[in-house]
Image (tube, rainbow, N blue to C red; front, side, top):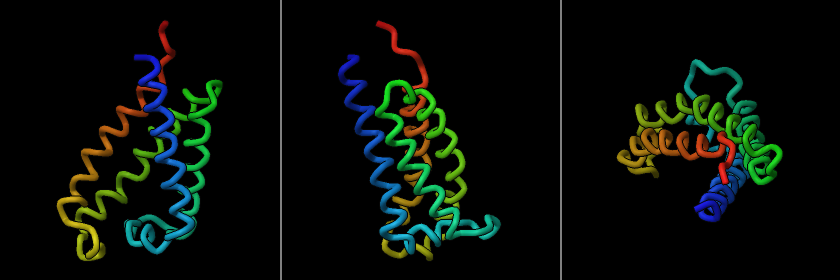
Length: 124
């Protein structure tokens, strides 16, 4: 079971690294996600991309993986308003099925749980 959890941790970290890189490759996708009440949209896209890459990488380093997991939890909570904004404004995302926009919200809960798994010390 420990090996399976380790593989899932690397998969989880890789997902964040790739998503973070995508913030720089396709910022035009992320900018409309930003709710109007959040200032500095471009800066927020850049900072969230950096955070995803750094935290994803830190998850791979045993010494920092618990801290990275807590950071990912904070990040997932911080980006929830953007996911909610997407679901409430599907007209801004015509290439994404409306059901998919709503599906992102409970998936965020699954990702919070997944990150939480790595906040605890492993018991042998």
